[in-house]
Image 1 (cartoon, one colour):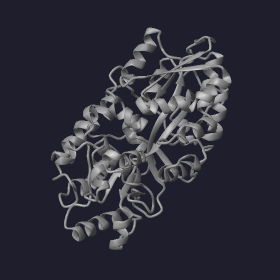
Image 2 (cartoon, rainbow, N blue to C red):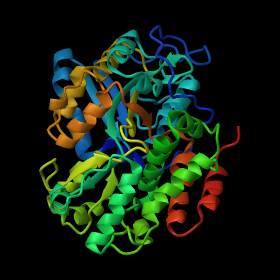
Image 3 (cartoon, helix red, strand yellow):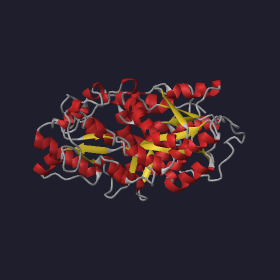
Image 4 (tube, rainbow, N blue to C red):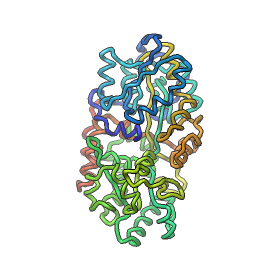
Length: 448
């Protein structure tokens, strides 16, 4: 299970409303030091052989996380004590205010790190981390760890969204090819519906309290591909409202597929079944051939290959493979993704050493080699990932020509990104008109 998924299952932000973010495209401040407000959190933490780390990564992923740094701990005589919580988003702010913050936190939402940094809880990135970020991370990624002109941490893991999963053998048998433009995808969809005599697409938005997020991923893909990165950034920062024509066009374009009963919901029923189908369960109908096309992030590789879902294989010549949601024009290189940012509340020598290690290619290769995740660290060897789809995703992240944008709902205030946006998409699938849904979401944006 992806760490991004853990964020999706977590409660919406309740404690810290994030407003006025200016995250994207910020330059890396290699000089570091000082906070956004000029005061800074001062000295914190002690050299006692122990560094505490707090995050949302749990269960098997947490075990792999601890395995990834086990050798380094022994070599450096530092005990990294990791604690996970599905209430991280609500608890991290409370702990910071109460004086019980961990030495390090792994933030699944850049906006939450920025908010705490602006309140002088987070240490500016030490020079060692700033050097790694400058060398191994793109400006896009560095910007998500930057508030004002100050770098506060380093990216950790990543995911690439927007993959369309399909059966290579079904495509070959019917002479279908991967589309290179959005219009070609719509034409392919119509051809598949006519050829098969049933809906080719399957979708599941169910995710307990976070139901709706797979739909917001669709919209984010279309906003970036149709309107471009500048409009995407304006949307994230609320310089344009949800009711802007660019956002409505993107939503309506998604509706050309998801609201068409001839195109969805293969293996489940009508359009309305999208909301009652959990996103994990779709892997079963994709693997058994009932479903021909499915939109989901790189982490879905694990669900498809899960024996409980039929144990389908993933690869260009295997049961299931994937192509990236095409751009409006052929050759587009914009992708949406997600990930975590490591920020520190302490600045003692041992905490600095751990944060430096977590920002290094050595740690990225150690963790990715254990399976299931990837990193945008340019020092990562794609061969460290055994999964072919993760290898492809790493190449996309490391391509200097790629235009990357972080998941918009992760950057927006919690009341919008992980609340109103989710429920608005659910209402939209249930038949509420686009303009009403967009007005409803925009009304949730916190006042300045």
